[in-house]
Length: 306
Image (tube, rainbow, N blue to C red; front, side):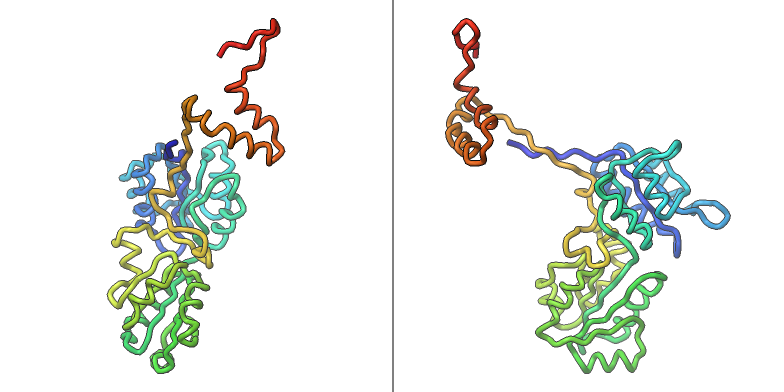
């Protein structure tokens, strides 16, 4: 038995352009697709008010070999990729982040097409204690606020640090929890980005199992993951990190099994197979094994040839 991986094709990629031309998202989606061996990529991106696609987005996509680029955005772009139109080809999978409407459209169409993950409005959760520089935490929360629909949350179990942040007027929402509840609180939120700053950051990171990406230490800002660190910045949002993984080369691969047994190998397990089929009340399953070794007699009374 062997496991075989093959690239999915064609793939639709959604590149948002509402608050900023996300050139980095073109790289973070198209490059893994190319590495996986995807043959056909269909890219969609919203036009501006004058009906033009962002030239940096188009140029980056073209540089990466994407030949089919459409100036459409929103839920209607996702629908076009899923169903196909006279101009837009139907795809097998849709990837890429977007606003709440794009994320909802992907969720609704999951099953008709595959999707990467629910990647809606961006979010960050920062967990810090009194050893964390207040300005670092403020800067991380403020960076998230640049996304108009983004969510920035500070979670701390340190009352003195909470008072410092209140005095400093940091942006976002603050949640003060007891030390014993801290890990459960962070895993329960299952955020897209989780930033851990403070003396216990490394130890805390080992106890986190529900987050799109975890940034450990004072010098690991989310921007590092957005542009340079290596993993794609297309990550599950809205608590979806509890079950979904971020986009990677594996996102663009599907697997199947190949099973090839010999006559002697099947015979060695025949009785077990027949017993299981009998137990489940599936006589035709049992017979499909049995007939390999007890051929049906031919009409003349002779056994059929092996």
